[in-house]
Every structure is written in structure tokens, then in C-alpha cells.
Amino acid sequence: MMRSSHGETLVATIPPTPAPGEPRQLLLALLARLGRMVQETGGNPLAAEEMARRIRQNTFDIVVVGEYKRGKTTFINALLGEDLLPTAVVPLTSIATRISYGPRVGARVRFLDGRYEEIPIGDLYLYITEKGNPGNSKAVALAEVEFPGEALRDGTLLTDTPGIGSTFEHNTRAAVEYIPQADAAIFLVNADPPISEAERDFLTSVRPYLAKLFFVQNKIDQVSPVEQEESLAFTRRVIEEAVGEDGIVIYPLSARLALEAKRIQDREKLARSRFEEFERELRHFLQRAKGRLLLRSAAGKAGRLLADLRSRAELERRSLEDGPAGTHGQGGGLPAAPGRCGARPLRRQGRPASAGRATGRGIH
Ligand SMILES: Nc1nc2c(ncn2[C@@H]2O[C@H](COP(=O)(O)OP(=O)(O)OP(=O)(O)O)[C@@H](O)[C@H]2O)c(=O)[nH]1
Ligand SMILES: [Mg+2]
Image (tube, rainbow, N blue to C red; front, top):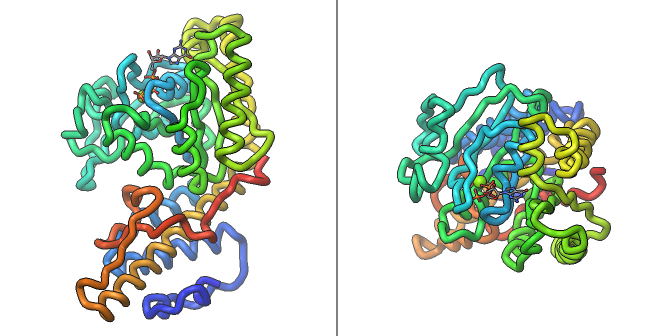
């Protein structure tokens, strides 16, 4: 199938398809070959290698996204039950921060030039916040944190992202660039204000990249029950229209109350936060669908890598035909994510390949 969708010389180098087997093995074989092809054509094979590593280790990356100040970082801290990542009343998170299971708390920073540096967890804010690292002057690509939390023990990764739509344009870019790497997302809006036009547009643009989306209405402690219901109904209508699906589930909760409750082990407060309803559903989802969805998500990403290779072959063919003026690269959709096959003129053209398109339907 791969071979028939490509007529370019590049594709003529694809080795024969392996014998039918287990989907996991097939996907690993495909990723290995894609990595080699990307490398042979001058690209960076890191994205294919990273995907293969995640399939082998069975990790599942859930990214938390939303507009600035919606409470994304507080929400992650609440999931972990600890004030691990810095939060603030001003736009704060400026670098994607991925948290995985580890026997003890630790942190390291990956720079744009590929270097890694171990850092004390207390220094994290110097790298991942707008205040500590204004305009990403420290050239950080990603922060990686290890934490001995129950929620992460099964291989779940939680990634905090900068808020979209703040005055810091690079924050939006950093959040958007991370999304194609993730397997699922938790999209946070607030009870007040309810979902905005910018949030709706963002949702529409990232939807094709994610195999599963959870919707959370945060900060319910700031409104009355009647206002919260009104806001929820409005938000649901807007989201259903944006994603083209009926009957979506939105989890109303208060991340701040949940975090406070967990820290002082206050059962009554935790119940008021309504956080456990979401946690229960997330746990069930991961037990039910994680393995299946991971493969589907990786297949989608492999499809996009293939689309990138195809674009590159097409660009090269045109430039050979037309000379230097024949480069017709049209960046569209989301920018190329860090670590993707980043050969020079190659930005993805338009939407992701339909082969890689994950709609999230059917995963319940
Ligand atoms: N009342 C209330 N405040 C909350 C809740 N969750 C977060 N906050 C507050 O909202 C502010 C922003 O929280 P953050 O967690 O830093 O928000 P963020 O979305 O990560 O912000 P950026 O990183 O700047 O995009 C902080 O003052 C939090 O204490 C909540 O459930 N209720
Ligand atoms: Mg934040």
C-alpha cells in the first residue's frame, strides 16, 4: 500500500513489505524503514526513533493544552497530587514539560541544539517559565521531569504546554509544535469565561493530530452551580460544532481545590472539586484503550512522516524540472514539530495524510 501511493524515485528504495504479522511488529518494522529513509534523504530520524521507542516501552503521551491561564499546570499538579510545576497568575509556562515515572524526582533540560543538562528540580522555573527564560533566550526545546507518581506508573507521560493566545507568541508556537508528538490531549477551558472563538479555532486545527481528546471545564469553584451549568451547555455546543461530533463529554472540576485537597488529604474538599470523576475516567480509558490507541497514534504519525518524505521527493523533482524557482513549499496547518524529519524546504503541505488521520471516533 505504501509503495502504490508513491511514484517517486525516493519510494523506489523502500524495501519489500514484511510478511503479515502482529500490528505492533509491523509498525516497528515500518518505523525502522522510515527512519532509514528519512536519514538517507538528509532528514532527522529522531521522530521515527522516538515513536518506535514509545511503542517498545508502551508509553502514552497525554498533552494538556488550552489558552493561557486556564489552569493547565495546576491541573497537572493536581493529577500528581503535588505542587511539582510552577504556576502563576500571569502567563507563565513557556516550554513544553514532559513528566514521566521515575523512582525519585529529577529533571533535565533538552536544548534546541540537542544537548541535555541535568538540573535540580528547584531550578526548573529558570528554564520553563516566561519569567526565568524570557523569549526562550536559553534555547530550550523540552524539559523532562521524573516523578514517582501513581498516575505515571503504567507508562503514561503527562506533558504541560505553554498557553496559547497570550501576548507571548512563541508560547503558542511551542504548544502547537508539541501536539503532533502526543497520543492524546486534555483540552482545558474555564467555567468563566466560557470557551472563546480563539479556543474553538485552536481546537479545530489540532483535532486531526490527536487520537483522543478529553475536555475539561476548570475553575468551577469560581462560579455558582447555575452559571457553571450555563457555561457548560454553551461550551459543549461550541465544541460539538468544532469537532463535528455529538454527545461529547466535558468534565467540570476545580484543579485548584483538588490540589489543595490532595495535599491536606481532605476528602470532602476533593469531592467538591469533582476531580475524581475525571481521574476515574482517565484511568478506565488508559486500561481499555491505551495499547490500541498508541498503535493507532503511531500509525498516524508514521503516515505523516511518509507524507513528509513524499513532499520532499516532490519538491526535489520540481526543483530539478524548474530550477531554483520551482520550489513550491506551502507551509500549512501546524508547523513541523521538533524532532520531525526536518530537511530543509520540507514543511508539511496542508493537512496530515489521510492515512495518518486520527479522528478519535470509536475509542470509548
Ligand atoms: N479558582 C481557581 N483558580 C485556579 C484553578 N486552577 C488554576 N487556578 C489559578 O489560575 C492561575 C493560573 O494557573 P496555571 O496553572 O498557572 O495556568 P496555566 O494554564 O498553566 O497558565 P500558563 O502556563 O500561563 O498558560 C493560578 O493563579 C492558579 O492558582 C481552579 O480550579 N480554580
Ligand atoms: Mg502553565
